[in-house]
Amino acid sequence: MIKSILLDLDGTVYHGTKPVAGASRFVQQLKQNGLDCLFVTNRANRSAPTVCRILGEMGIECEVENLLTSAQATARHLSPGKFYYIGEEPLCQALVEGGHIPSEDNPDYVIVGYDPFVTYQKLEKATLFLRAGAKFIGTNPDKVLFTEYGIIPGNGAILAALTVASEVEPTIIGKPERVIIDIALQQLNISPQEALLVGDNIETDVRAGHNAGVPTALILTGVSSREDLAQSTLQPDWVVENFEELEELVFSP
Ligand SMILES: [Mg+2]
Image (cartoon, rainbow, N blue to C red):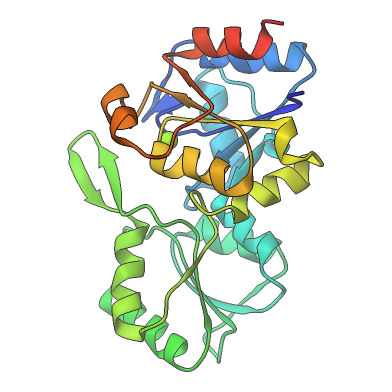
């Protein structure tokens, strides 16, 4: 029996600043039916309160406990240590809140999240720390970001630069790896079979569910299309066109 929905954000619940039709009602209905909703996002560059406020402005109910970012998952996954990071301020904040200490003195970890202000100097420091033995952690592996003005480098592109320079492969926390999903299940205190992961991307969301043993529903509101699905060896448990069909799937007896 499904107890909780793990819901992706970008391309599933909203596009940029626009909510996806039916998302708000779906989240409301989950609450009314006693199901938990946990938004699970690979984004590490927005704090949980910021994401909640953005969702609220779109009419989608969200408390901070309904949200798991890859920055928070990273903070919870790692044992306490000193870290050097490439990323935006919310990544550092989540790590500090999780008990880790920012440091450029022999750090235990080099933690890399999406950073639109990445510089050669930051890559240089990270490479030196990695070559000195720091553990290499990527909040998420997304190679590119889809914007209104085209496709641009994502965190995966920064990770690739460091992998080449350091000859170390990163441990990835975000989807499609199972780490973030395992942490979500722990947070909700449920087994994989009691969750349903809903997302718009076969290669990240469906694969993450598959890796963690969580049933998945692909919603065709974002990145992946029926064509992609036909070509993919990986298949979700369900495919829904929109939130209307998702409601039927989740709430019809
Ligand atoms: Mg998505």
